[in-house]
Length: 73
Image 1 (spheres, rainbow, N blue to C red):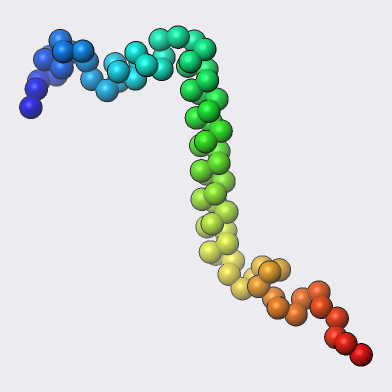
Image 2 (cartoon, helix red, strand yellow):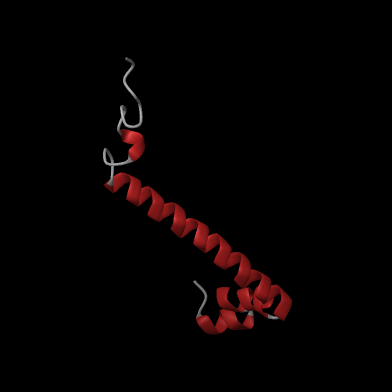
């Protein structure tokens, strides 16, 4: 296993690689932040929705079979 000093000499670690790819130029960084925020929002929304559905099984409108149906006369 290489020492941290050797990793710095050989091109750096993960954070330095991330800096070189993403954060060096402002337009790329802004795009990365906007896309990351959008993807993060979608992931959190999906997770909260699934958690809410799991905690409310049998209590939702869709789970009541006769709700909204009129009896035939």
